[in-house]
Amino acid sequence: MNTQNIKEEIENFDFNNKSIHDILDICTKIETIEDAQRLLERYRAFEPQYADQNLGYILGYIEPPSLREKMYKLFPVNHPVFGSNFGRNNQENPKR
Image (cartoon, rainbow, N blue to C red):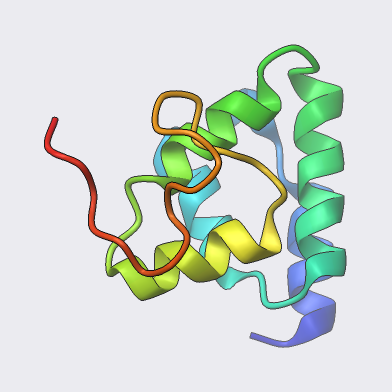
């Protein structure tokens, strides 16, 4: 995706009318820490108390583990249940 297009998509992303799947979709399009930071800033403005926990949780559903690891490198959030090491080092999802 063109860098300019993702920047526009981030700026126009309406958290009020988006599902978890929509949030995951835009996250997986992001390639830079700058864009990840901007999306997270916008999410925090929308949901100040829970944005980091929510994003940390939903990133945990990304497959394959290599893509999940990439997302946790871009976004400075942790999984609220499995902690700061989860999603890093290409590990598998724990049994639920």
